[in-house]
Image (cartoon, rainbow, N blue to C red):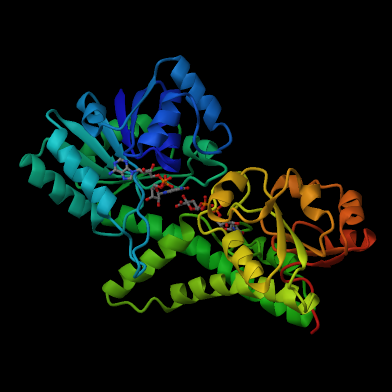
Length: 433
Ligand SMILES: NC(=O)C1=CN([C@@H]2O[C@H](COP(=O)(O)OP(=O)(O)OC[C@H]3O[C@@H](n4cnc5c(N)ncnc54)[C@H](O)[C@@H]3O)[C@@H](O)[C@H]2O)C=CC1
Ligand SMILES: O=C(O)[C@H]1O[C@H](OP(=O)(O)OP(=O)(O)OC[C@H]2O[C@@H](n3ccc(=O)[nH]c3=O)[C@H](O)[C@@H]2O)[C@H](O)[C@@H](O)[C@@H]1O
């Protein structure tokens, strides 16, 4: 089938290229001319394992095209995916302007029957608005509108898209879903057909629940530090209960990224609009932002004079496997270190070019050892495997003083003792004043 994907970001590019892998012809549309030019020249503008390979193959097979012209993209397509961004408004609610603008443009440009699939994360009620918007332009029912939230994780995006645990399709009429289920049935056995509102809420509830698990474990981590317990052991112990499960119980600097923070705040806004207080989710967000502040406090407790202090930082992306720094804890931690007057040397395997655009004044290192060299303390902000595999003897020999504050709990405290580090992590050791 010929498919058009509007919005060539993380989700659009992954969706489009995975669809080519299933044999479909895809036109990717984006209003960002620079991004389209880079894609046309064969560059993959984001770092995502397996993506460049997939895009290269699609290009070789002549299955992928790029354009800034939406009309050109939708004209010959039987199916149109909307994958534009839905960022936060100042009041925390989701900004739907891009989705609605795209809907309006699609409405103006379609002549024959189209299946329109809303994949962007949108608050409950939005698909109905999009439907109205399309109908206003078309004044006909020459389309079917489905909402199909995406659950992929950055860093695993290609794998997740191709191996979904469930596919959710929201529709007004279940007879409308055949074309889309025909695509998904090859990669997923559990396809849930429901109404628009349920599909929209499933997406937000999933992200809000994941965020709640992280804030929960971080709150327990705080208690662990005070009472001599170890959060990794506590998390392991509760995770064996199948009602709780072992995932999303890693204590650390809290959740970042382009989705969990914005979706928690949009869910709060949706709930409040519906007359619900959303006390739990407001606390989830509060615990998360406190987590970064508490982390820098550990440094201040250990090394009371920070002006001119050389600090090494490992990790800038919001999680490993990506160059994405949106809402990364590194942004907040580095801003605080700057305020304290530290001299900051940073290293990240993928995210340094993006970080440099916002913080050009840091010292960017060629490798993790350069970031450790002559440092009075080393802060670990992202759990990249490269850091787990570091030669700790070498790291110790390069540092001015062997202090590590690990925001992701990547090492065992006993091992660090053997290497004679003063090692502090999250929810495992108390730092006495
Ligand atoms: N990033 C992720 O891991 C996931 C994101 N989502 C959701 O998917 C949606 C997209 O997210 P990302 O791909 O991360 O965003 P993104 O910011 O990486 O990409 C969005 C793209 O849409 C383009 N765009 C915006 N308005 C446009 C318009 N009017 N016409 C054409 N192109 C336009 C932008 O230029 C940008 O390239 C969001 O609603 C997000 O919440 C859902 C699951 C996972
Ligand atoms: O809607 C979205 O955009 C996506 O948001 C998240 O995916 P993502 O943000 O890519 O990454 P996660 O793996 O969820 O990690 C988010 C943040 O939580 C942190 N985290 C995760 C797990 C954990 O146990 N502890 C923890 O602190 C990570 O370090 C990271 O900063 C969801 O996991 C996806 O299912 C969803 O599709």
